[in-house]
Length: 297
Image 1: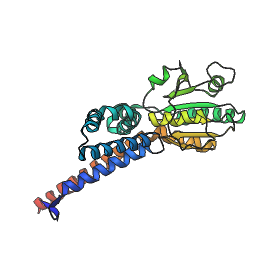
Image 2: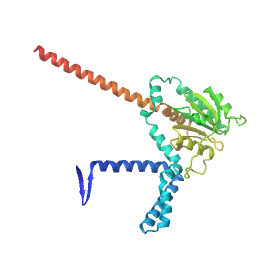
Image 3: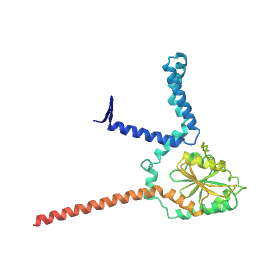
Image 4: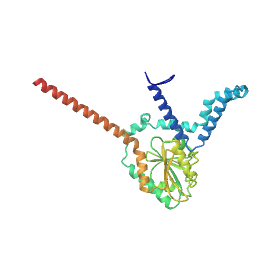
């Protein structure tokens, strides 16, 4: 069935859906590459492809055959050149709760009685370090232990406490140079190496500590807390976005919101299911009562 006919072009409903899907994917690719070196690489690759089309159209056989060989391995070249962007895209798909079985189980059996108290321990430590102009980099992971990054440092597996965090980031501590990873209210590891973002539009005031925080939030589904050594200001990065110069209360709210996000969504989902079931049971009961009254009549 055709919706529109323009000359020889027949447009179906599935064609409109196809165009919408491709537009959405291109927009997501643009968001992933925006502000990074990958945009320039993509434009260079596109320009080379246009040259190949022109060369082939005017029958320049030698140059056309060379470029044809290059285009033949274009898929492999794209994977190599855009591996970070492909990783981010797959990570974005993997963030969906339906693929995150661990998060779903935690929604049923997780225990969050001390979550606010533990977050306050971290924020109070960050405020103390900010007042003393001590730099810090703290990674919060909600779903995984980030073993790949934890193994780049020193594994600790200790209970979370303000004094331990201050001891780790003390300027004379051998563990202070690197990131601290927190998962399930435990300090998993310290002195960890994080990936650095390739974004070129970050303000000059942000040094390598902030660039590593942004890079980690781009590469993983984590929230990263940064304390600036120069200014003492506190920031949070999430999904490649940096929230700068936050107060203690703002940081506490953002961390708790991040840690409880999936469980809140899961709770709302099951509340809706229970509500629908109760409504269905009431409707069935009303129908049954009505049937009994009619039979009695």
